[in-house]
Length: 501
Image (cartoon, rainbow, N blue to C red; front, side):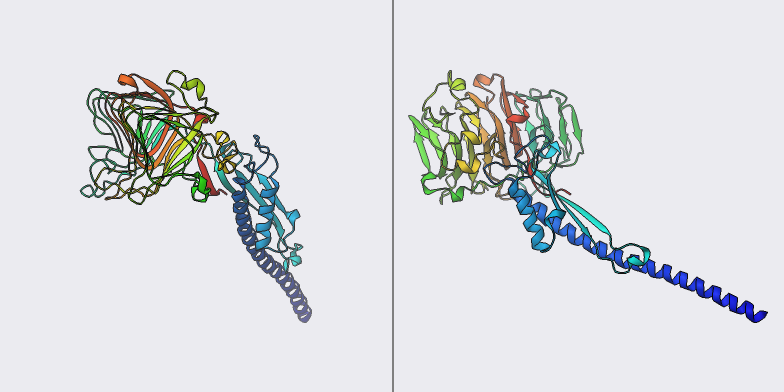
């Protein structure tokens, strides 16, 4: 009897052991196969990320730019060039990966404005031991998104990028330490229809933003306000509404592609030394001006549509400078003259936009800069911002798309050199007393913009312009009455590049 019971118990233990062994083997198999699935996911994610970036690189190329030929919203199917670039990149990482398992779509998000692409990869991991549990590998899907182009953004009238260099206050020269980064002085009234962002973290008595005296006033329309990383200086007329202690923002136009002016044909070099326009009338064509342009003695310049590159000469000459009493007007290619009274009709926005691009500038450590952008007292400046479809020069095929990233840029001062203790970029200076009609975006990510004198118009009269500043620092002085009107389709659109998912 006892022997029979022992045998029966031994048999039961053997059955339980076999069942447990099968379960353990199944678990081990699932763990092993799960590891294979994770390894495959990593491979697919890396390949998908590379493919998304490769496809994004194509978005801003070709006759028609964008991820899709149909911008939407939502955008349509990915362009053939975008699809091919993504597939080729996947095959470079995974040579035998089937095209049927590669999906390439344009991101249907209004934020990215037909400038983002998604690459999805579908695979299945190898099944080695998971079959014990009835599973032969795992289905793996990855998605990667990349952007290259214009994006939507907060409605900024002004963004000042100076982070506030007051950590070494005795080293940075006064006026370049970001304390304040934005200042209002004199008897000016400045109105903003969009937000004012100040990145300076200055919290000293000078503040990151300051309104001096009793005669300067700042106001906001449309629910806009000031957003400041640091603090506001004490003032009888403080800026309001204002939010301090906010996070800094990145340069909204940091993703702008460089203008490839170095590859332009030799015929587009309009001047090999500084062009001095000494009185009289001169018609200017877009191209490269080595040494820049200087105007004096009541000179008048008529600018035909396109991009004007001002690059420094070996002796440091450069920039675009208008002396007192000079005038500059943008005009369509078909016209060679205008007057203050007829300019608005002669130069409609779609036909006569220009972009003045300042590059290769020198530091202005002590002496007056030779390569700044300046409009002197009593000068008349009436120009429209760049529109790629109006650019009639031989460089226009590179800028033929209606979605061109330079559209609505009026002035671009290159970010290099970045301001340092002993290196300040030449300023962008708008003097007063003349007639100013400008719109679009003034982009000087390392520049100090100076609004002085009666630059709101003749005699200091009120001037409303559709204008956006993105720069390093900004100051208002003198008798200015100025309104920054906001119109999103009149400003350069922010751009971005890289993986977003």
